[in-house]
Image (cartoon, rainbow, N blue to C red; front, side, top):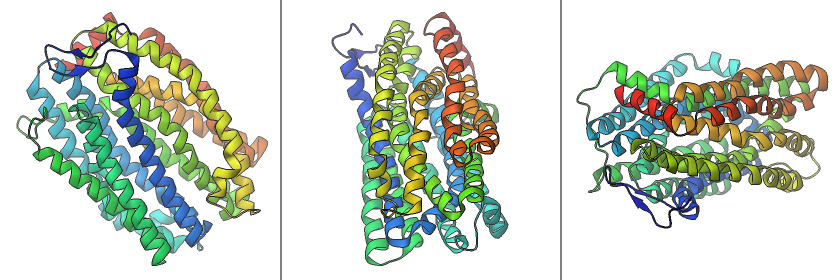
Length: 460
C-alpha cells in the first residue's frame, strides 16, 4: 500500500489507514475482540470441565445449537446492516446509514425473543432432539434456560460490537468485549470454583458478562459525536430484508453450525458415547482460537473495504486485498503446526491426564486442524463479499463449507474411517470449498464489478 499516512476521506470524514501496518493497527481491536471472545468461551469450558466434569462439558455442547441460532439472528443484521451502513456513510447518505443501524438493532432482538419463547414451549422435546441423554439432561436444561432468558443481551452484544466499529470506534468495541469477558471469567471462578454451582454458574456468568457488554453499548449510544443515530422513521420490510440478505453468510454459518453440531454430537455419541461428545466439545472450543484469528482479521478490515467502496477508491480496496492474500499464505501453515505440537497441552486443560477423553481429543484435534490450512481463505472471501454488499455470494461460500459439504462428509467418512471420519469431515469441507472462494476472489475484484455492487446496495 503506497500511502504513508492515513487518508481522510473528503465525503464521509472517516480516517482510512494508509500503510499496511496502519491497517493492521486498525484491525487489531477487532482481532483482539474476536480472540478475547474465544478466550473467555474457552475459560468457561475449562472451569466447567475441571469443577463439574466432562459430562457437564458435553451438556453445554449439546445445547449449543440454540446459542448458534440466537447468534445467527444477531449476525444476520449485524454484519449485513453494518456493511451497508459503512457504504452509506462514505457516500454521505446519513439517513440510509441511520436506517440500517436502527432496523438492525431492532429486528433481530424481536426474532430472537420469538425463537426463545418457541423453544421454551417445547423444551423437553427439543432437548431430547438435540441429543441430551439421561446423564446430561439436567445440565442441558439449566444451561439452555440461561441462554434463552438472556437472549436480548446475547443478540445486543453482537449488534453493538459490529456497529461501534463501523462508527469509527474499534477500540471501544473491544472494550465492550473485554469488560464482558473479564466479568465472565471472574464470575466463572466465583460461581463454579468457589460456590460449586456447576453448569448453572457457567450459564449465569456468561449471561451477566453479555449484559455488561450491552450496558457499555447503551452508554455508547449516549455519547456525543457519533455518526450513527437510532430512529425508526422510514422503516420498511423490503429494507430489512435487504439488510438480512447481505448478512446471509454469517447467518448461514451459525445456522449450519447448529445443525452440524447436532450431527457431530450424534455421530460421536454412537461411536464413543458421552466421551465422544466431550471430545467434540473440547475440539470445538480449541478450534475457536484459530478461526478467531481469521475472523478477527477479516472483520477488522471489513469496514475499510466498505469505506473504500463507498468513496469509489478501488485502488485502496485492491491494496487491502493484496496484503490479505499474503497474510493468508503465510499464517495457516504456522497455525496448523502450532496446533499439532500443542494439542496435548491444550486438550489437557479440559481433560484429566491419561483419560480416554484426552486421548480422543488430541488425536481428533490433529486431524480436525488440517482444515485450518484452508478455512482462512474461505472466511476472508465470504466477509470480503459481504463488505462489498454481495452477501448472497458470501452465503454460497458459507453454505458449502459449513453446511452442505460438511454434512456430506459427515455422512460419508465415518462409515469408512470410524471416529477419524468425523474429524476429517471439516478439512474435506474446507478444501472442497476453497476453489469457489478463490474464484470469487479472482472474479469480483475491486473495480468495475464492485462499482455495480455499490449502486445496487445504495438503491436497496
